[in-house]
Length: 459
Image 1 (cartoon, one colour):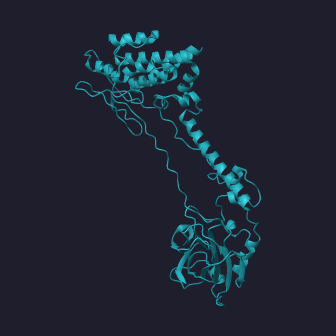
Image 2 (cartoon, helix red, strand yellow; image 1 turned 120 degrees about the horizontal axis):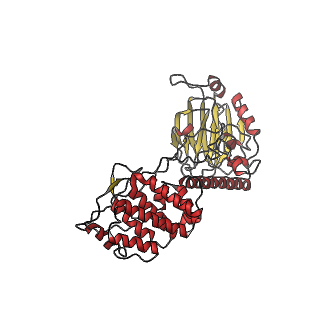
Image 3 (cartoon, helix red, strand yellow; image 1 turned 45 degrees about the vertical axis):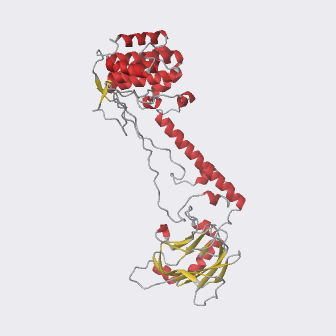
């Protein structure tokens, strides 16, 4: 026989436990004793034992013994019960309330008979709390030995405390059948999946300005995610406007970006804007990215203009919808789980269950991509390094710093190529985004003009 625990352990709310499921948090009180005639040692939930003590809070004498056969019954113990138990893993332990401390038991994954013996429960219950410098009030012995499953039994009852807990257990409804348990668990999983889907959809609606995006908005590539924080309603309007309006918007954005950057005085830029307006392929150097950037870098007529970064408007933070558990409701209600004994399987911890520390889900971190002296690589290839080229891609975490300056010619030039893209919707988004970056802190004026153009073509 071995004794993995011997001495004193601390109890709170008159509870201590044996747990063997490393991924579980233990049953609630009613679940632990459902269907039993024994009220001191709850073994109704697989892999767990709920052990009741007379003392509410403080240290009690506690010994755990693991042997090979049934030990003799010591008449010194006042209350004695037996249950059957099988660990669900090789990781069994005696665990204090809220996991404050634990002692490994090293039980095998086999069938055990468990005897729980108590002494001094009534006196400890009347005292309620034992301080560290006070003498011991109650003590307990928990014994394990291999044995096939048998019904739980009360071997000896002396205290009023034990009588109370035996009566409590016998008045509980029977535990769910395996089929009822499986159905309740299925419904609980369905409720959680539904809650996760609702949270995901709620976040998507928040990202898209309070509306769910169409499939085309979900599928469109390019800089849609860069433009969305500035005006998500504009994205919905452009999506509904049709290809003709989308092409016109792309052309408007490209023209305004080049005008603001001072590029329309350059013949090769003016030729490209004319070709774009007439629906013709873009002329050189816009037929080759490297040549386009090289031309920009070497043309002495390119103005040296910079602008502060465009910063999206502030908006309320995302607040996910409350799940049934967050509202303090029983998930059985949300899942419409089966009624009767099976309903107990789907519920979460209640006042009768031991408290567990809550784990807050960390908020989702958002990284916003910013552009300095070049268009983001989500739509533009980074130009090759050379002795004369001076454009770079910068990334920032969080909101952009408006004090940093952006080269307007480098931000505006990609708007022409973007506007000529094969997908009208993506072309509009990419060109408008390039124009927003080009306008910088003055981007609200651009977006107001884009809105007027989109609404004017609808009227």
